[in-house]
Length: 94
Image (cartoon, rainbow, N blue to C red; front, side):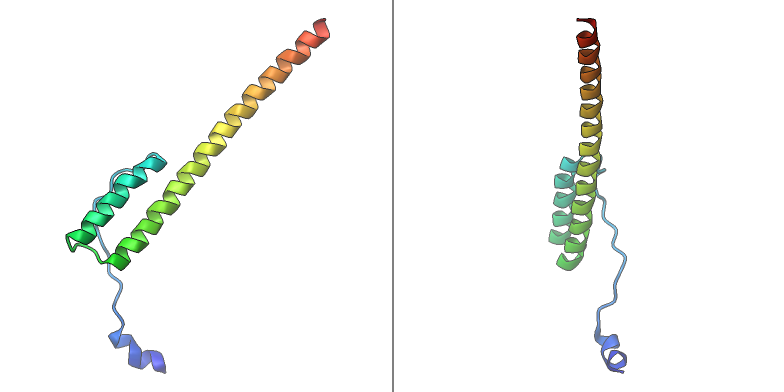
């Protein structure tokens, strides 16, 4: 019932469109955040919308970091397995 009285006074969500740079690496988030800040400064988006966009950028950057770390860990594990295999063969030959 309260919602019926308050709803007309609540701001409606809106679709915002701003040009963000491509996020290929986590450090690209710096440029994306700069674009978001510029959009606030020019009045294109509100600070609240900027905050929500910034959170998305931060989450995406973290996902990139996690994926990169997993790839690097996989490569280290493969190299370690190769080294162990080589050492085992050398020990058998001695």
